[in-house]
Length: 419
Image (cartoon, rainbow, N blue to C red; front, side, top):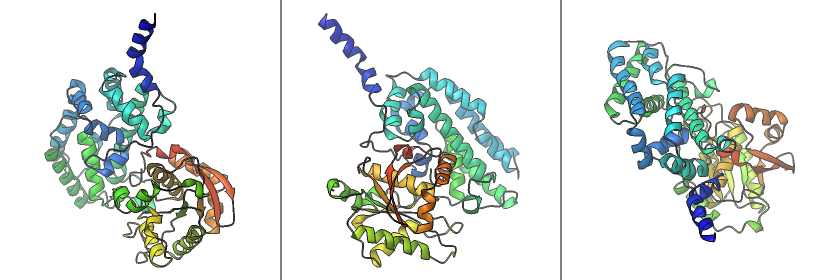
């Protein structure tokens, strides 16, 4: 009897092991692939491309292979037939609802808990946390489908905004760089089409459309999502190294978050408000309440500025306020107050800091009270689909506590500059 039980246990061990990995793993290392912008926006597609066994499984599937060929055939036809009509090039490169459903059905058919796709879900999708909102509610097979649908819509969104001129969530800072009805732009789209046609020779079903979207972002000069990457070994290397040695019991907070304040003058590197926010954060650091300061803000204001708020704040903290570099963590990607907090949680988690310890937000009075109002939580739900923090105590007009919420790891598929 004991032998039978032991055999059954061994037979079901893979399924038991899988069921125990239902949350993100702080030891998991994100795969970067050939493009950081791609991996940040469409992590499932990056995994499909970078995991050899998964790639082979998908490339040999006749239905998926036919979809890839259909997209590549469109590239060739468009070069001959589309002329100055930009939608003629772009619309067929988007995934239609029927194509999304077709792929969903094929993935569902191909999926098994113990095969290549099961391994992808159990060893990558779930522990990465990048689809955590879906992973918390869905079984593995449905998570795979939901992640595919999210990534397909992310590709479509890039093409709609940066090729077809649809308004993004924040038009004043994120819009297309071209006049979409101009002849020069249609010529540029022809050139993008030709380059993708020449470059994409493989059989992965999503590659032609994804490559088209990435080239469109590139010609719009929208590389913000890749700024300063890989940060853990460059601009944040010293701080991440220090984080592994911190005795967290000696600090009240794991970090001090300073949200950015973008200037309105294109020649101004750091706004007056940004300087003042740095000063209040530096005071808290020298009080010894936390071992790190996170400066958060990307290349946001004004439109297509060359200055990164986080980088300029870091320089100010080091040069003017004498904060040591190893105490400063940059988030050069956040474009809004919502993502100041979200990205801070992501950095904290990836650096191995405690997720059950409070953090401190130090900023000026107006922004401080704005973040702690119910309306800000509603904005988070509307714009990023979750609330990446839990409020703690208010300490002063300029300082309040928050606790990290790991929903922050979820990719936002309609913000390609900071997904």
